[in-house]
Image (tube, rainbow, N blue to C red; front, side, top):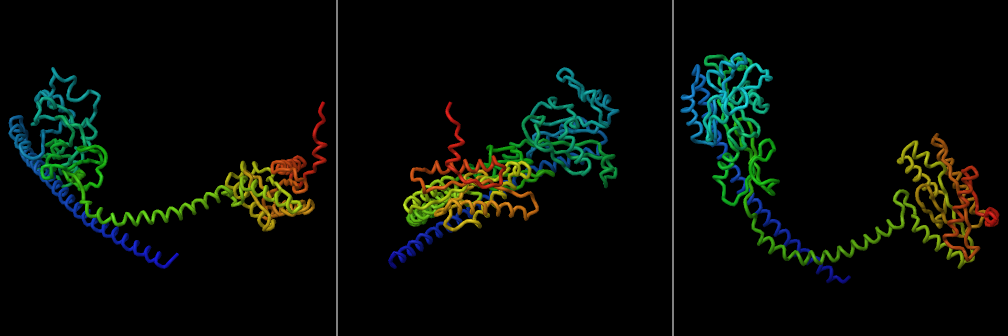
Length: 491
């Protein structure tokens, strides 16, 4: 090609690459700014949700401290205390949960009338329950009827029981996983332990002995989400996840969202925020238009190159055996037809050898298919070493091979076949394993111009099967006269 052509190609590349690089840089800068703003908004929303929750949890701790100084807390006192707990912050309900030893259950129920006999099917606990202590909801303040949940034993729920034990042993406010709240809706309970006033609580064992009950709070997920949404723009998608479980927001994953942690008591939520829209693409697109023409030019060149390479690869795959690299059956038939045509033109003879590995199925069955594949590749390597450059080698399928010997007499063909069989036998014997043998059939072509590819292949096959019938590990040359004698006379 001319020098000016290459100069033009270089100029197009320089302009196109420059425009694409400029578009990418502009987009990345806008993208970083967009995500920085999104992260700042997500962190602000997370801090808002944490602050609202922390206010409520702080009130639970204050209520627990008050309850700890009282020998006994009654319904009137908790009604006043409970209203302060749910008036501000994110708490939707609060309750007093005493620790009731198993032996005091009946007296406790009688004194506080926890059984709502006309509306409840059973006692505080089913008779089959056997635990050293119970944790009934005694007094509650919520936006639903307090009697709806009064008397429920929190220790009967495995999730809540686990959090109760954790709070008892740690002395801190502990949150449950995501649960169905007794006041309705989905959310978490937070438990703040109450210990006997004046008792030592330095170790978990001392805390267990000093435990008198809990102050419990209920957080609805929607209210926590509202606290976060209150500081976000209107067109913003938000998800809240608790322990990888979606608690609020649209299903699925938000593409390109910013996720930040939200700490409530001892549990970490994940707040995912996705702003509407995205980075401005107008300028990057305008810059990239200059690269489109370059892409079209390069595409036409690449398509031409790749098509040629692909055609070469397809041609190779269509004519080559994947395991051995030899010609496959399709290529073999083409090469045999060409060899027979040359023999007719030159008035010479050639030979076709068909080899089949003896007892190959036994190798596959005893050693496995990988061993069989290795044997096939070793036989192919032996054929390459024992044949001339002008000969054609092929794998016809399975353990069957073919060798086309142009310009070859009958005796030369027999000698070549026997040399191949001997080489294969000796090569395997050197490994200390049982020798591998082949049966070889030889058919001549070129002396009968009426013969076809199918005829020559059939003759070589017949000779090969005759070698197998006569004990294997042998070479047989097809004899037309003997073949006619083997044909039974019509009756």
